[in-house]
Every structure is written in structure tokens, then in C-alpha cells.
Length: 169
Image 1 (tube, rainbow, N blue to C red):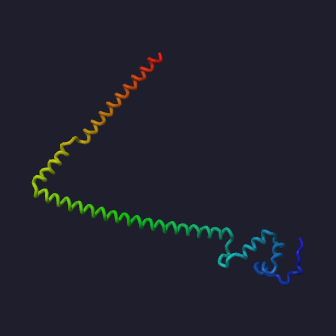
Image 2: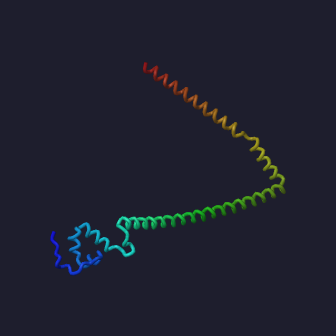
Image 3: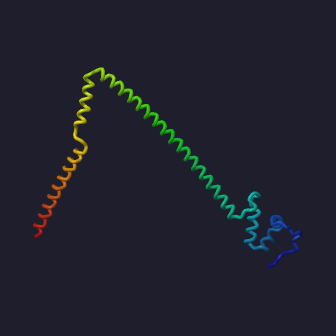
């Protein structure tokens, strides 16, 4: 390794001054890796001078994540606000509809009480529903029909299988 020491007039104590005055000598002394490190050290921002590359990368990644998180949270807040607006509007419409229906029912009840024939018709309709088949009875009837259908299908299947066996033998 050959150093051209005649070219060095003054020795600088700071790496930035050494790099600025004799970049070739710095590369010869330290080799490519140290020169690369020194060059990276000099090119850094003044605020971040005390941080290593990995620390700077961590900071940059953290800032990027925070930026993305802020965007995501902003859109989530917007979506929540929109959802609240939609829900509140739907609730208001439902309440208005319910009030309107109550008023109509009250008016009908008032009219039906004044008109005895329509009042009797309403009572007949209510009695018809009360006298109808209960859900339990209806369920038992449907279950019985499906069981009967299942047994018929099974007996048909058994006769088909028996016919095939007799045809084979």
C-alpha cells in the first residue's frame, strides 16, 4: 500500500474536513468499506448525525407506518361518521313511520268505534285468528305428512331393490 503523504498539507481532526480535503487518501487509508461509512456519515442530515443507518431506517419506517396509520384512521373515522349519519337518518325515518302508523291506527279505531259494523268485522277477524289451528298442531300435521312421505318412498325403494335382485338371480 502506497500513501502519497507529500500531498497532505494539514491533518484534519474531523472526518468531514479530511473527506473534503483528501477524499482519495481517505479511501486508501480506510478501504472501500470505511470510506463508504465515512461518506454515508458525511452525507447525513445534521439533525440525524448521531443516528446509525439502522436507526435512521427504523425512524423512516416508523414515520411511514404512522403516516399510513393516520390515513387509515382518518378513513375509518369518516366511515364511522357516515355510518352514524345513515343509522340516525334511518332511525328518524322509522320513528316518523311508526308515529304515522299509530296516528292512522288511532284514526281507524276512532272511525270503527263510531261505525259499529266495521267494529264488529274487526272483532270477527280477531276471533277467526284465535280460533285457527295453533302452531303446535300445524307442526305436528306437517311432520306427520313428511313421515308418511318418507315411509312411502322407503317402501318403493325396497320394492325396486327386491325386483333387481330377483331379476339378477
